[in-house]
Image 1 (cartoon, rainbow, N blue to C red):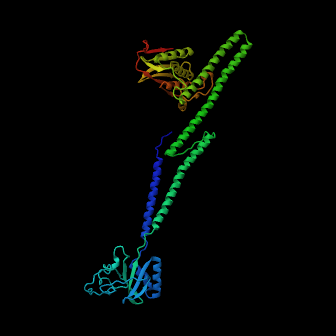
Image 2 (cartoon, helix red, strand yellow):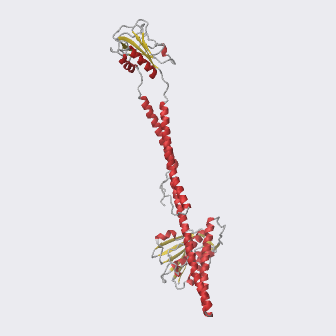
Image 3 (cartoon, rainbow, N blue to C red):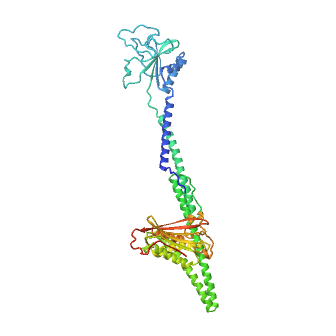
Length: 501
């Protein structure tokens, strides 16, 4: 399976949190900006608001009361004789004194204020004589106005105003309102929406693959071996999904292998048992010579059954040893043996069984010692040689056995020029009960345990079994085991040998 660059689920959730925080912060900025753009009261805005009512005192009083109720504006209006004309607050706001007068000097009057009077700024245009004539002229309160002290009420603001055609003075006080809680409430509301939406999407984003994995596990538990999550993600959830798919694939292959085992063993047991029955019937009905020949055939069939049962039992013992503590159920009788001696015995046995098969043996000088169980290691070599013989249908095709030293390992190499192994069969070559040649002819019989046993025996000795093969051109199996550097116990006759049969 192709390895993917994994993105951590934690970092994705962190990114979601960062995005939510940024959205809430942006909403707070936008709400603050909108609130700051709302209109605010000043003298110019107030004068413009009251101008339409300047000709009707009763309408003006009504408007003042409405401004008091809606915007908490305190307003009092005085005539030029300091008489109160209208007010929406009790007591009325006091008019200021300007150089001994209650009203600011008339526009264009450049007489200096009386001696001892404080100068003041009448507005943004400068001193009393500065602003241009007009109906509305805002004024700042004098610096000495007593109510401007720290902690007191907000300062009064002044402006000239014309009421019913007469000059008047507009006095207004803009109350300091408490900070509005509306921006905070809006920000909180929007934040809850963002966090809720993010939590919902994140929960669905995590829950959907988990639900998919749950459905896949239930389907697999009910016997649907083809169930797969097929979840395409590159985070931890995707890794769990791929692990589930791999597990399902292995379970499917395991159960398929067990089915093949039952079919193969049943087939292999049925054939020799059927021959034994026929031989017994012939022996019971024939003469002594016929019975003797039948018994000889029965002995061959019984040997085949025994070999089959031994292979199945040995494979089961290795399988159990791999699943439990090492050595708990299967132990090796290890001793230091010469690699050449093991190979020579295997070559001798092969020559006796297949006298007509061309066979070559080459053993490297000082191939060294290996710590191994001699019987099991020889059995692994026997299986490799038998496999080469079975899958070399041409009787004239030779088989070669080599022993050589490669670094820190001693390698037993079996080479044939037979059928070879197709590329699609190589991944399953050492799977128990797998056979590349599916026919059940007597020449290529067996249940597919030979190579499996050879591999497990080699690996039990700390070695490795490798194969190089090409369909139609033959195969090369290499069983490499760690060798001992001390060769003093090696046979004195150890030398490079080459034999051909």
